[in-house]
Image 1 (cartoon, rainbow, N blue to C red):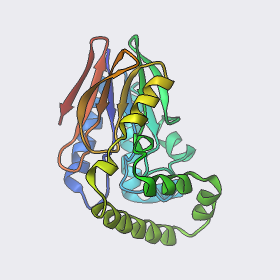
Image 2: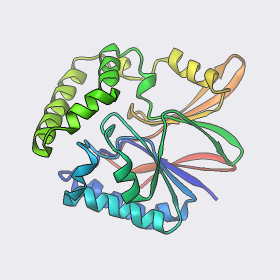
Image 3: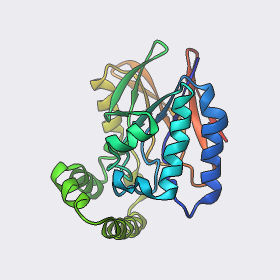
Length: 239
């Protein structure tokens, strides 16, 4: 028995090679797992569940529906790129929507799962934008616009985001050690699994005398991968 964790796939029609890796993953690898946890940024962007009529979006959702139909429990957590994923998408996939953060009992090991962006507290500009993007009223206003207008606006925000990142020091966009320690302390010193930073690694932390491990999931820009966890621990795997 094992569960697998992925994040930061950033799937988009213009990345056919990695999309094929995803379809193979859901067909061949994920069905062997008891549960698949998607910890945010499955899509490069998501403009609303009413965009499920788009052929690409429908193909992704249908692949996940086929997976969940085989008995693999499917859990989805919002990332910063797909914060607008809602109940309709979850229903189409047969997925449970997870709060960020969520504390799991994973084969006897208390495990905290997050997207990871809330840990990047040194990036003050991003944290301000995150508050704006998660505000229900702002989301309502955005979703009230026609689909073409939303897509155009989202593409503009993507371009602006890339320009902004180029002007920032790399360390600012990584997790803040104090934020990691606070999250571990607040949740009783669990194992921590998150994505967002695109810096895959296993980190060892000692917080208040407690030894904790933190796993950072890899992005799928160059190569797909996942974290496999069972009663013996976790191991990063590449596809």
